[in-house]
Image (cartoon, rainbow, N blue to C red; front, side):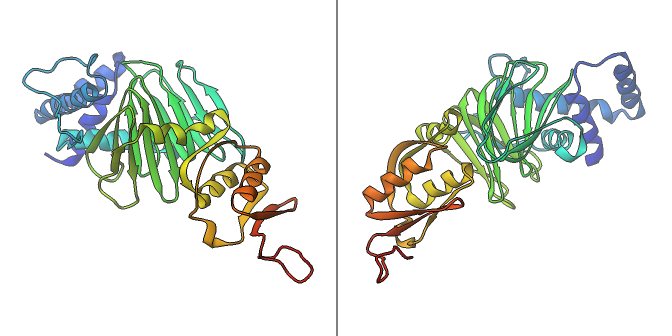
Length: 322
């Protein structure tokens, strides 16, 4: 059977509930070819497996079929399952539909209640589109990061398109971060299904405390369990940067994401120094003061930047140099 038939069947499986017009259209499609009914059944079965993995206590039972339970919670859904994944990706490509566009500027953190009862907390310098209708809940994350507290709605799964990766949930909490280097999905509550947009059906189930990192061109994500690290990485929701043995270079990069006045480390030999602490995102001066004391540095401040140099780097007049 052609991929186009499987894809059409997957699209029908995802369209629920059907109104009278949709039902007539589906009946007409089924009548065109006796094979269409089988394709639709396969698509519905594959979708049930996905939903059972995401929400096992609520998914309808399916005779003679059970969701795979590999230790790494990853499997390939062949045939109709691959079409389901492809259809989900195609449904929500952010260029293809019109929804409410939401953006944040540098340093802005926004809490956005959604009409379905969900809440999106949006990080600095982010952009996304939101489309909630009677059949689906869709988020297209164009750039940046957001953390979603998803209101449970069994009839309308919550799907996030982050370009190279997709995530599907029913009622849970998770973050999605999209950068030029790739996409990371991290789950803080419940269960989320994720898969790469360009791989037909390769799907991973993430539970609370787990993450998946997708890189461009890679068929499967890097996954792992890191509940404490995930919570630290989401400290921005409270306006904080939490460091636990992260490098100085990483910490400066995080502060620079939120502040227009940039921190510049003049001596690269210090960028791998490790730090521990909790700092306010909008108070880089406090962070710089700690660095000056801990690493014997001096800060030179201008309206555009805070330049850090070692105290022993001085010219003949006693001025700090790089």
